[in-house]
Structure formats: structure tokens, C-alpha cells
Length: 135
Image 1 (cartoon, rainbow, N blue to C red):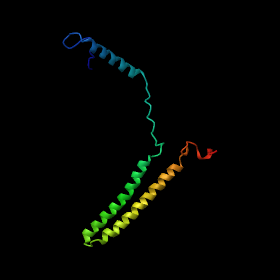
Image 2 (image 1 turned 180 degrees about the vertical axis):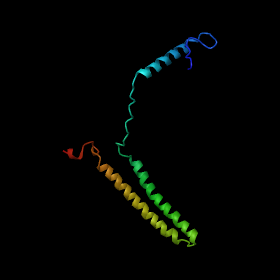
Image 3 (image 1 turned 180 degrees about the horizontal axis):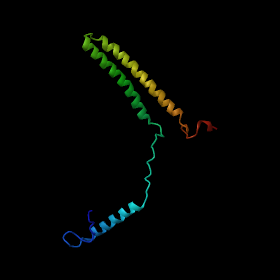
Image 4 (image 1 turned 90 degrees about the vertical axis):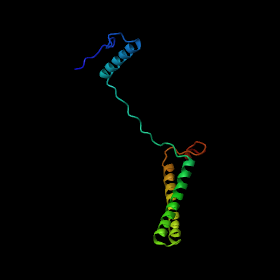
């Protein structure tokens, strides 16, 4: 077993400075408090998105959905043209398919956003009143 050294003695026999003595005393008090106390660490609360996304965020998401569909379709069409040697046919065909896919993604995202707005319990209009409170 290791011998615990007193905080008031050093290896060379000299007395430690006051700072080291107070730190050693503090360490002993912390260790004894940890042994005797039964602390229950509270779990952090789960953060939920209670507010709706900003209009700028919605606009960026919708525009990126559309642009991504068009670019992916154009890339696939260009790749097929290079692979099979069919000059603009693949690019035109897959550019159209990519545009359709992008529009469908935008419509799907808009529906999801609309559902999340309708499901909010505290619906309010611009004046801060619930729709039922109109007088």
C-alpha cells in the first residue's frame, strides 16, 4: 500500500508554501465530500424544436431541393452521353427528369412544412391571437 504523505511535509523535509497547503486541504475536503454525498446528476432536458423555421431557412431548403434535382439529372444525362456517345439526347432527357424530380421534392418539402404548421397546438395569427378568438 502506498503511504499517504501529509500536506505539511515535502520530500526534502521543508514546509510547503501556504498555497500548496490550502490546495491539499481543499482536495481532502472534496474527496471526503465525494465519498459521503450521493449526488444525482440531473439529466439534461431534451431540446425540441418548438419554434417554426425561419422563412429564409425554408426558402433555402426549397431552392436547394430544386437545384439539386436539376443538377443531378443533368450530370447523369451528361454521363450517359459520354458513355454511349449519344450527344445531347441523354442530357436533354435526364435534365427533364431531374427537373421533375426537383419539383416533386419541393412539393414534398412544402407539404411537410405545412403539416408541421397545422399540427402546432398554439396557432396564432399576426396579431398574436388564436384563430378562434376573432371578435
